[in-house]
Image (cartoon, rainbow over all chains, first blue to last red; front, top):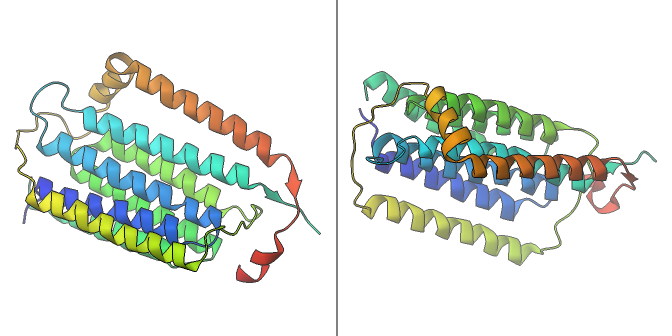
Length: 91
Length: 169
């Protein structure tokens, strides 16, 4: 049993498409917002996979750096979206 | 890559996929947070199996934060303006995206290189973040600051409950 770049990219493709599906399918906007971290996770996994299997020259850990930045951006996007949705008043 | 790492990769990928599917089909806020936590755990496991320990740690922290935010009981229910057919078109678009990405991954002719980094890589990634690509790090820092200020400003004002979404919780 081994892991190749193709297997990593398949997982990344699945996560990205799943995130897009969540963002499109959820009726609740804050629920749809949770699709963004899943999409970003797919992109991050692809970057890490390329850094692990395919980076031969230059900075080999650039993909890991991109995955770190994407995770932070996903957290900011969810925070901003939920903040903009607003707090529900008590009746 | 040895068998242990390969098993870790596939188990983590299954965990992330199951978490994502659970997230897609659940409506409860608590369950949504659990699903997001599962996705984070799975992605962190994938990163760990791919010798990216520092990335796994950051991913775990960020997705735990996302899960805690999604779990809050007092954010408003806002219904999407898009109607049923548009949402269905979006779902079909996501399926097409999966097909295109999977085809690209399957048909791609990728170069293989030997990985020389360590299992954690915090020093190398830190050097990249703060020396080589400092501008990108500053841009993400600015994004975090803007989103925190925007979210805090918007969160201060209480808004009336949306009547349409009341029965769907």
